[in-house]
Image (cartoon, rainbow, N blue to C red; front, side):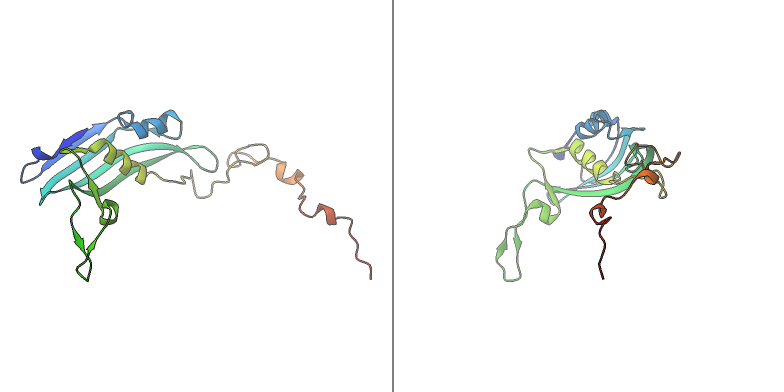
Length: 181
């Protein structure tokens, strides 16, 4: 999905994109690795505006994803629905410090992205925004007990006897130690 900068009119443009997650390479890789499953297409509404050689994207992303709980591995569903903003330039502007001396700042330090040859890759921007919005530690519930470390039983569904049988070996060497008075 390429946006051609020279085709953006003076008043800007509105774009609506609705694609399956398999259309985005990084998101497709996450699905193939069973790290998550996208339950709905990735829907993006964009307003693109060109001002003084800069291209501003104001967008909104919506999708629904199923991710395993980090404690018990049960599938959890999360809606992703958020706005984003990104500014693109074809070359970095000159920036001067307080003393008038020119500063060398990277595009990231200025909050800008560079585009090349009159093209902005929307695929990369969209998948990057989805990755930023995905929960990094999803839980099925705040009270999730997780899995037993010994037998792997889901402690939310049933209990096991592993904790009762487990003996701490941390101080086993001191078990027979006696202090003489």
